[in-house]
Length: 425
Image (cartoon, rainbow, N blue to C red; front, top):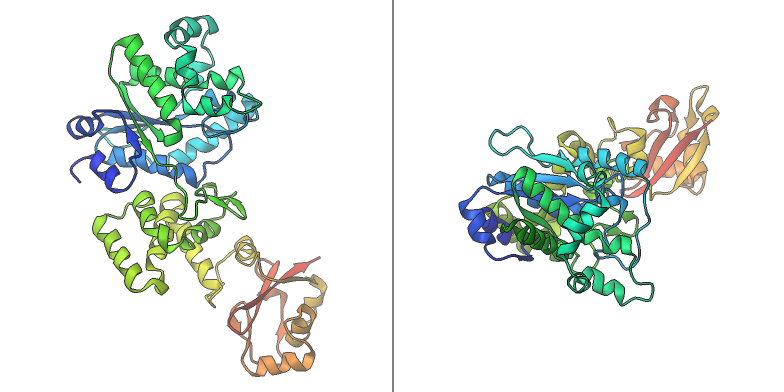
C-alpha cells in the first residue's frame, strides 16, 4: 500500500473522514490519537478496530497516542447510549486505567526510534482544570445550538428522560483533550469509532477557533455481524481482552465460530495478514468452505496478537481436546473451561483411595453407562477413554494420580460424548 490511508481504506476501516486526510497521511508524518474510556477493567473485542487502526498508522511511520480517559470516564460519554451511564468512583477509574494501559501496550511499539507510541491519561489535565477557565476558554466557543445538533445529543434529547448536563458537557471535554494533545504533542489527527464523529469534529472546531490551526478526524465503522449482532456480544456475554474475563480458549473459539459471511472482512480488520494472504483464504473459503481455513487463520492471528504465542498454543491444544486431542499439559482451569457445557458429576476423593475406583463403577456412577454390564461392553468394544486415552481393560481402576491437579477426570464415550468428573473432598 502506498499510504496509511490506502491501507485503512482497503481494510474497510474508513467510515468517514475530514477533507484532506488522504493527502496528509501520504505526504507527512502525523501524530494521531484515539481515546479509550476505562469504564471497565478490560477492553473488549469491539475496541480492537480502533486499536488496530492506531497500530496500522504507526507501521506507516505515524506517531500514535493511546489516550486512557481517566478524566472523561468520571463523566460518561453519551455517544451510542440511550441512557445515562453509571458514575464510577475515582478509585474505580484509576484501577481501570492501569488495567487498560497494559492492554494498550500489546498493540503499540514504545521502543521504535522514529515514532514511539505514547500512552496519556486525560485525568492529568482534566482533573485540575478550573471550571471558570474551562467555561471561558472552551464553553464560550460553542453555541448550545451547535451541541444539540450532534447525533449523540440529539437522540438523547428526543427521549423522555433526556440527557444530564454532565453528559451534555462530555463533547467539550473531548474537544479539550484534542486541543491539549495538539498543543503539547503536536497531535493533528483524532481517530475513533463512527459514534465519535460529533466529539471529534467538536475538537477540530475548537482548535480552529482557539488556535487558527487545521487538524483532522477519521472514524472507523462500528462492526456488527452479517446478522446485525454487535461484535463481541454473545449469548455468554461480552468477549473481553483480559484473559481472566474471557479465557484465551473462549477467545479463540469466538473467532473460530465466525460466519462465512463475516470472516474475510474480519481478517482485513483484525489481523496483520496482507492482501495476497487474505485473498488466498477467500479463495479457500469459496472452494473448501467445510474446512474453515479462513476461520482458523482468523482465530490464530487475533489470539496471537491479543494473548501471545504461548496462550495461542494452549488455546489450539484445548480446541483439539474435543476432537480427541491430548490433555496432558492443560491445567484444571483450562479443562473446566473447555468442558463447561459438558455433563458433569462429583465423586468423593475417598472413592479413589485403596487402589482407585473401578472404571466400570465410575461409568455407571456418572451415567455414561446404563449399567455395569453396559460399561463392560463399552470398554471391551474400545469405546471408552480416560483423559482422551483409550481404556480397554474391564478390570482397570482409575487412580487419583490420573486426575488433573487432583480436581478433574475427563471421561469420553465414543467420539463426542464427554463427561467431566469433579473430585471433591
